[in-house]
Image (cartoon, rainbow, N blue to C red; front, top):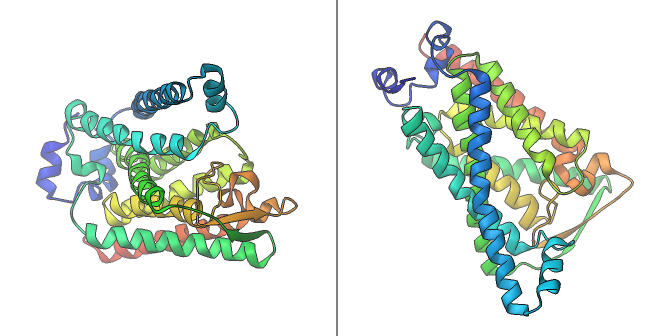
Length: 320
């Protein structure tokens, strides 16, 4: 398919608004199955970067300890997801961004701005995403603390690791948003309705977290789906990738490195350490973290409703 001509004729930033025109979009775009398979294929291909990094890390420990059995046991045992391995996974997501950009540009022949890489409102969108994530996460955490579902104690996080995790979360947040919102949602919306595009990319986003190490629950899957819907609405509202990418980054970093809450079941070094009441998993999310809790469900639902209303207001007040 060729989107270059139609996008340029609409002008910079007008591509997403054209998605609402069913007469045009029904005739263009890939089949929904092909779009999903393309996204999954590029995602799996990008994971080889993590495997290479992980393999290099194991070799490093083997050479350092000079004990193959001890080193290998350390890596595949309970400490497998230590801070160094997690950083390798986060930084390797840069490969995912590169693959989706190259595929969109050279295979689908679509402008890179259709992935959300536009400078329009970038300086406003990114800080807004950070602020929104901070307010949302702290609100959910505060509710859990006030109900006795969680308590916090002082943790330890060195400045070098804080800087590394900051960069890592920036890369990881952008990568997942490019895959699910910038690429998959816009690909599907070119041929189908926006509702279908939002539902499909949100379902895939939730399913990809099934392979996380611990604590996945029904509420966690629901919240992951709602999170993706919220990010999709952010993308549609701003017509750029920066708001949802910043929200994603700050959401993970605040709950993980600041509050010490497991990020989708994975613990990272943090300023505080959480002690979750095991008898109140609905309010603290259990081993999966707050993302599997009712407070986060409420926060995400409120966010979705507010953005939906903002989109309706924007659509009603915009050009017909």
